[in-house]
Image (cartoon, rainbow, N blue to C red; front, side):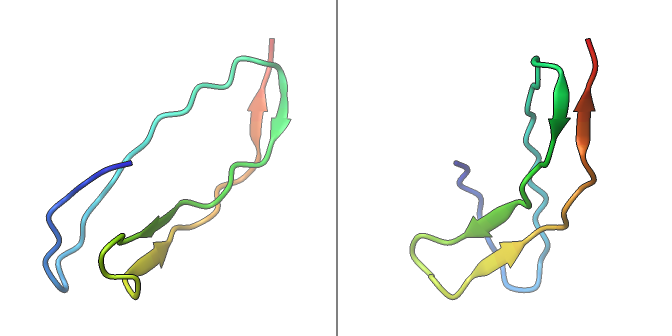
Length: 55
């Protein structure tokens, strides 16, 4: 969860870090953001390729 000031037509970049420790191939879900107080503000990010964790 993040709280950032939002101005109309000004982009905001959010970054998250995930750590995969079990070997395997994973599908990373697309990022989704929405405003709690302005429900019509929503954005969906791009999907990345598969995440492959090797031992």
